[in-house]
Length: 441
Image (cartoon, rainbow, N blue to C red; front, side, top):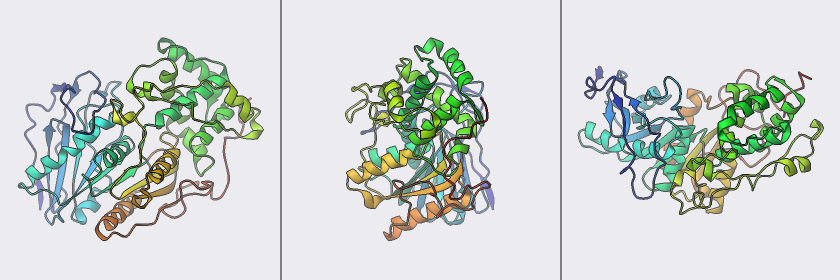
């Protein structure tokens, strides 16, 4: 039976909506404020899958969609979406993304809920609070019956939401699945890339008012994959080494989605004096650069040339005002799984190495499983890969048997053979490729 149950949206379907951030928050988390602009709230009516009922509408946390199977198993999966830019012609338009494994969830008896968040932008703190609020909304639509277990999942920035939730509200969720998760140190990587671009090209990122002109000059000197100049090949090698080292599809990841240049521009503002909490929290003083030996620039020389960015100690500390910009302390208390692609150069796999070390230092290794997938680009997991990981997390929570994973701290040159399903076209096998071959003088 198909049923579509939606909250009343007629009066607000095309309305512009501004939601201030004061008053938002729960004990343990103060989010970075939403961008100050209006937000468009379109109709997000959801047609239920066979054997389920659906609810959709607007709440304090943005727009929501909820789906409950007729044969509900008593458990709820919260799905946190990734970054949506607040710039451009569609930057003010909110939207909800059902989980990729929606059909699988309903077939297995799980209910799910997802939110737009109250704003777009890089807002993992706001995203976490708005996603958590869905549980009460679900309970209301479920006749007052609350879920006996709640799983927190998310992709990209939504993965940051998931890891933030598992740290800041460690007993609120039965388990967490973070897919290609971002995190605070992602912005260290972006800024370190921009600093390396300065050293290699000789173009300084001096002030925010001239960033576009400075970046254009850099790009002209470096080229664009696959047509990189000699200096471009140097920066390609640096990015691969910063992001986890040689691994399958790393070269392809630099070309995917314009990441070679995009990583420079994403870190430029922090070097040019940007004052946002994220820019103030960036630190690159702890990083040691590496580069392939045959590219004409020594490791020692590179580390001498690169400008370093020091974090504002008022922001990047455990007692700082915004938990989402502080590195994770690893003190998770519930089963947590991560999925990461080898060729992701937008949110690179070295973030999993940082997370692993933090969890180990906290003595919580028994609560973390990490899996590697041979994929070019960002978050390109198959439905089968996502469904298997979620099912394994659920079994872990229910039965207490920790599932298998990969060693993210090991040699990644041929990583990801165990859980990648199916193998992607162009898989390089055991070939050790680091930087693109020279194609332009």
